[in-house]
Amino acid sequence: MEGQQSPHTGTSEPTFAVPYAPPVTHSPELAQFVNREAENRVTADISTRLPKVEHPADVKAVVGVLLDTQDDDTVRHEAANLLRRSGYAGLTDDLLKILNNPNEKERFRSFVVQHLWSQAEKAAPAERVKITDVLHVSLADRHTAVRREALLALVRMKDPQGFETALKWLDDPSPEMDALRDLCVRVVREQNLREHLPRVRQLLRSPNDDVKRQAMVTVGDWGDQGSRPALEEAAKSDKPLVKSAATAALKHLDAAKAKAPAAP
Image 1 (spheres, one colour):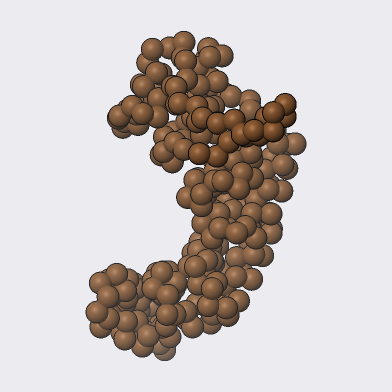
Image 2 (tube, rainbow, N blue to C red):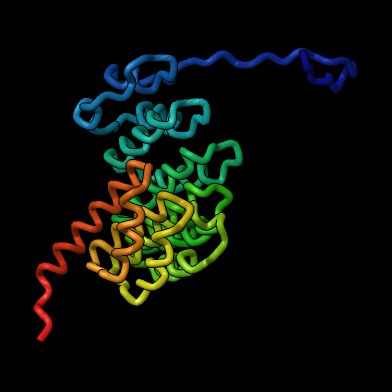
């Protein structure tokens, strides 16, 4: 067992892990939720069962769950929701603390970015600027899931850097960008940026199935008859999701062709 050297004797003194103890709550209804050793902590009715927390001890207990890297991601996610419903003023700062914690894993850090976007919706101007700045930085995060959520948040906020980044990633030929490119195609489609149709057509044959399917949805929605050969090819795929996306896009093309005015 590793020990800690005594400053007086120069010998090693044993150190012991502190046993887990559930946070103390004022409200009995909250006790199960904040106890990471309990079962059924998150239920379908959690927002009505625990609409908000008010007592300082209860707020502290829920914040403890949110910050606990050893707790379950889903429970921590609901802790953030509960604190937001409760009007907890320190939520944004705590979320930033989590995002900057090197011990946090990718999945929950991506959840945190989602929560930051939710915070931005009703944030005061200074807080919104703080969140936006963090989202900008997160576009270059070490975790792909965080980068994706940051881009999505910025686009939803109609932030220029979000749109610029989506177009940059869309055109970047690097194979590693395929983990992000499907989201960029979605942004182009939702913003109806049809000037990027040539690039979307190229992506109909992407080696990444997620990118390929998003491209298929886009050309189908846009009624692009020039994409028909690639879609007919994909409709014969042995991959069910690719085949389904291609078949659905072809139906859109057929519908668009039927509505088109006859040539004079």
